[in-house]
Image (tube, rainbow, N blue to C red; front, side, top):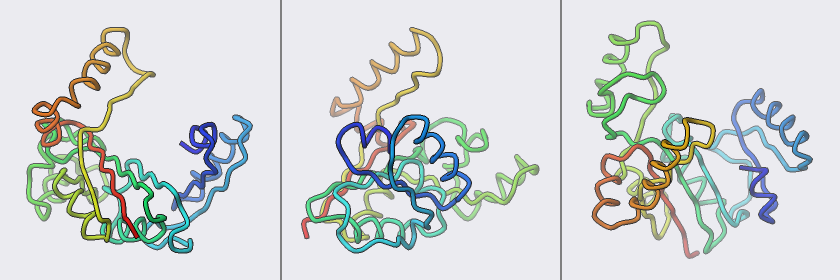
Length: 202
């Protein structure tokens, strides 16, 4: 995303809590001939001044943090008035396997039951701490964080590295129909991916 943002004329800053991924990211930037700022920080407490960013993108982040409310508040704090913040994540209620561990039915259980269920199905993994949100939860999270407007919709699906022409045609069609009002509403409820855009006026 940092490489793409710079190519589009932005001056991007990449943030990750894990230093090892920033080292890998720096190597990828060097390979691409891109000079950009990378910062090791926790999204729950960002080391930036208020209102400093014209856009914020949190891709597949919100479900992995201990305090998603703090992440949303920090995103609101460091975003400039009139800027856009985008969260993308997998949908809790998609009728698919849980994407991290490939276990069926996790998102349909109450949150307090999920760790025990995953431990029963996958005793080989660490205690389950992923909190996949629903569309309603994402929208409510952003509004509670101080954003004036928040809207959640089905996220586009892009997988150029997977499958053949048939799959790519299917994804193209999905990305078209996800914007149709009735289908879009249904996909917001049970589609595989969610995209929330949030803005603040001041």
